[in-house]
Length: 383
Image (cartoon, rainbow, N blue to C red; front, side, top):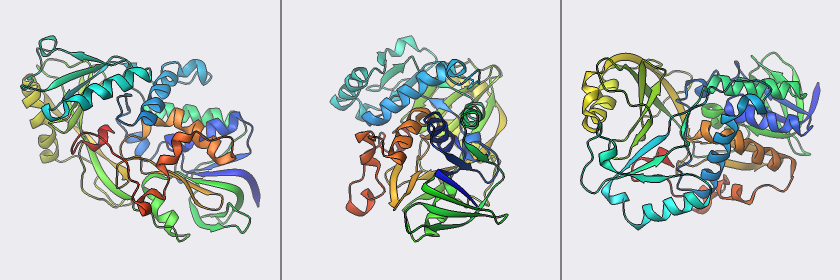
């Protein structure tokens, strides 16, 4: 039987980041992953990196994460997060464009997030409706989710974290003294003084096994890919609030489209991993209305992935039992927040003056009615 100060279930980007920060802090830590790092939804993330959040704490986490991803090789001993700074253009509806948007832009600037309004005539590739406003975030871009996650896991391992890949947790038992006893599918037993469950779509079942039922659901989201063909290339990330989609360049020859809206629920152990033609069409039609030249783009497939979603589309972070914590429900925001958020969660686990901004994401908020605002209208994924 092994003993650790902290155990983490799940080696997606969130578990990897927390392990990285705990390892560097010298905390005896074990990271358990049923497959390999980033093998779940993290590896299928579009990995869009932008800090234009309506929630100030999340905006700060995203800004700090982008800064880290931009110097990842220097900070993480030569690892490559594949970060590409393209900028991101948000197209806001007329109903978003009042004082609320002005206040948001001022708040983001105060947090150190560079944002500025852009004129429709500066983007002749777009069809902009009367009253809509364009916001440009020059520091945004996208990264390689697998490279970033593996870089963090490798760094954690170098700093003493025990990484147990291909290790499913078969039984989770709370300890009387706090923390948990973990039994793996192979029968090995590990005791941890504090446990973090960061298992993405599989977090809910693990929590229910110890009598904790959080209102988390799993949704299937797709990314439909297209070759540029004769279409004019859009070199930046585009977030179209009215259209309910985002566009992201995929290398030099393709782009991807994903939804900003809620999608059907799914079974994380049995879902369709490919994209159907009607799903691609549902995403490209509003994109063509916004960028008419995309009518000449060529379908190139895509993939299905999973989001673990909370009722207010905001993360769920905090204790659920004595010495047992959760980090879940990131609702499509996960990758871009994790590098910086991981340090705050690591501090929370070891009781090292946790950032007061974390308190708003407590799992208890659903029972007390303290849910959080998110996004613009139905485009909840914009945060």
